[in-house]
Length: 633
Image (cartoon, rainbow, N blue to C red; front, side, top):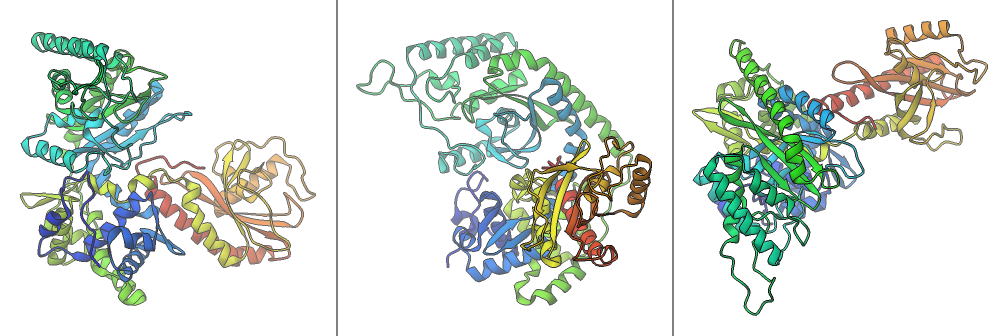
């Protein structure tokens, strides 16, 4: 079967034939194929049938099966019947890039504070060849809110950050951009944005507008002022069809009339054809606007954050035309955005000084050899050792380890130098690392390996497969809940099909004090609410002092066992779920009828299984929540 492993459009590679011809002789083919599968799963929003992966990659079904088995062993995918589903642990690849980049750690709090102050969505983005990728999103929750995710790739010409990054492009980057535009005229290689729309038509008013804009642009280029007049014209004049195009004056000057066309019919450029003009304007102004270039209604204002004279990232304030026009966004928020950028740049300067006097971080060996040996023994030929090793090379990078030479990569992974070298050659060929003076760095493209669909994963979604496995092992109902005030709310549940079983649905709320789920979460609070303790059964604890003593014991022992206090005959044991910092964010329980097990059997048989399951949930949660806030529901 012919392979279909050419890089996707938008990645700077023009053709499959050229890409395949350029594959280095020492490249690791299984690693190339494994990354192709991860990329297809990412494009499919995180889930695909195995037969679908066979079709989209062009690989043989047996090869797809071996790759997904290896990825599942690594914890990067979950095999659910005939489907492969991306798993949260895959985010450790993107986390390696974000940690090495260090910008999220230093600037996320600034972006979040700006979003809170302005009550608008704020994002941070980095350049990725002729596109941009988001590295942070502080999104406002509204009926119409921003749907972009961390790791999403957008074409530079259809964004506000794009022109700012393009101010640092050279001939090679512009040639790549033109090549990609020609190869992908509708932006199909950027699934995060709507396809490029058809050319639109202007009328007489629009021709006058183009003339005014051109005159304003010339005036401002002479006096050196901000392009305020030109931008006023750009963003206050509505576009008649779709409102998704801002045309530069250099492209409007000599546009010919269609033969036989009416007064308003004209041949116009497609979306983004004015990108070079917008880049020139951004170079002079120091900021850039997106006036509905991605889709109608979406407007954004962007400024670059510089470090050592170069653009480190771009910060954007994003809104909707129901709240701000592009002109209003600029006039109202530009001064505050400038202040935020100044604070971010100061943060980077201070961090750079601190890092200059700190010893270089070293990574402990990953234990890869032991793990791959055990995996090979368990899975046999279905385990592709070279794929597992190659992906582990990405995780060698991290905080304080943004640049590594070959020896350092080999030491961090426990691989032989020759093996590490072949993996690095392969990753460089695919665009996931760059090499300069024998030093390697990760590129933003690493975020394209599963991060976008996984970056919106909630705690309930993370826990769901683990709850199912536990319920199947114990043959009892298993639930996930969060604390809301003095109540618990069920956010995940797997029930058993018994004649006598616990029937509770997701969203159900119960008082926290008489439940095992509630007690393990109340025990983590410095001052738990212990008012209105009503006797729901004869066994319900209603004395505040006695309940406080019970919570102290729960805190010390790390679990709660409640027997018949919520309902006669209902017995439950629960364990807290903790985030990376140790704070309890949820709890998991196993509930059953009291005839199923004695309290002692619950502690001896159920509790170890429950703790092991919560441990796996926490591992996934800690990976998923390293650079983002994981929604609890």
